[in-house]
Length: 343
Picture (cartoon, rainbow, N blue to C red):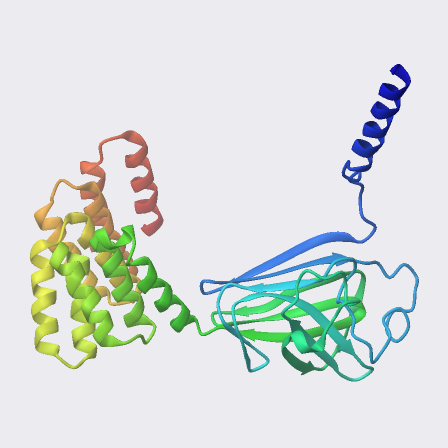
């Protein structure tokens, strides 16, 4: 009986040990990941990095005319959080197995719907979502394979496979205006819809990025209905002006001035200075300084506007008022130092 119990325990022990997970050890070809965001579109490449290690790579270790995994070990994958175009061809959002078909003169970059395979051994062309043909370029020596995102632009980036003395680039474009506006519409169905700043930001972004002006105006109207603030009214004014209604735009800007806070006008004045509209900035900031004569910050803003215009005398006078209104020694010293720079 004891012998049978012992045999049962040994059998259980053997089975239990057989079910234990393998020990985690470092991989020779290390795992890596690289990401780039264009607009709101996140692009990520996950891969493993084999080394040249003194071997002849192209046409030998990586044969020409055969599908190659673009890395080592598991599938190299590429993910897009929104639809994109690759080398001018449309590709849906998602995660793809990234394979290549290299030759001595051209490479085919393959985006395959199967992203969980081991390398390219189970590759099936029937699962391809897209193929594009690109031209490899000579490059500096790269001992371990790497993917990089080169030349990022507001609407595009170039992904590059780099290994040995070769670079294989493929361009990815994003319709940023479309994807951002779609995201705005989605987010405005959530908690952000309860804040006027969200509607104003949506309207302003659509205005600046050639969105639909009627939609932008609807968002601006929502913002104003929730709070007729300086920023909300000016955003609506800019939209109706672009739509051709200059009279309404001027009326809205005039109304905005009646509800503007000290901070609003300081920010607006600084914006005008940045646009080199010095006289307009000085007019706005002078009104603000008159309304808030004991505000050191407002006097400082006016001083900076005068200085930007090149009117040192008026700038010095405004700095003197700012120093007189300052409430602590550190602030007084900073203002005094700025004033001395003008002398």
